[in-house]
Length: 304
Image (cartoon, rainbow, N blue to C red):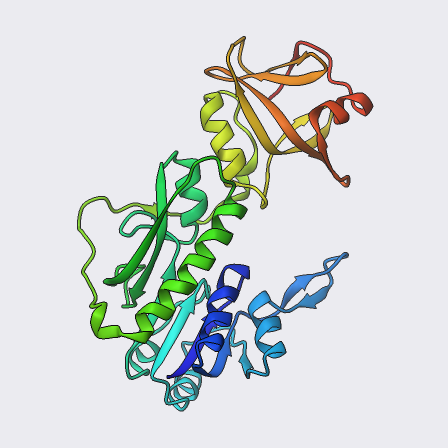
């Protein structure tokens, strides 16, 4: 098929590679424009999809919006059989949705209608879902409301957002190739009206750990925000990021930092938590024990 690919982050790259490996003609790749980044945050950095598409010799387009008639006409002129979308990040106007002969197919990282929206993987982990997955959705104007052609499932278990995202990216790529190989065998099935939830974009405020929550909730938040933006707390005027933690089989007054066997244990609203992988500002990732050797936290310290 003649396919327009639309994606931005690492999550989308396996689907792009799978389309090329399957022999489809990628007539153009759309991605969000380069953003400030680099070591000093001043140079413009191309998205993972843009870098991969350019390496494959595919034309890359990075409009800031698809709302103009010019951009919509340019998209339609590609005469695509289908558009394949994976975490593109821009709203597709109806004219874009209607342009490809077979419409637009989206790789969405949840079991719809649960977790429609921007952060389905993180929200599934943070909510304590036992299972999640990925679906190939026929796109329509609503926010992730389109019918689903095929889906795959996986256990959330103790995975971080990074680990689960990588797993779903590979699964979604395989499912997309299966759907495109025989679309008649995978007719669109309307989503249920029951069980709709929305996966709002992760805010910076959510990353600060609230120690009045239960230890189990906080452990899920830690995994859901790993690798980015990373859950964190402040102590002695310094921010400490928590990248992994374990729930402890005992409790003590909430929000009270206590060193136990040279490791950091913290009382929560219900239960206690021990960070196992931490990162001080401007430093590398270490164990809690290693951090405490150079940055001791006095037993009984209260964390805000």
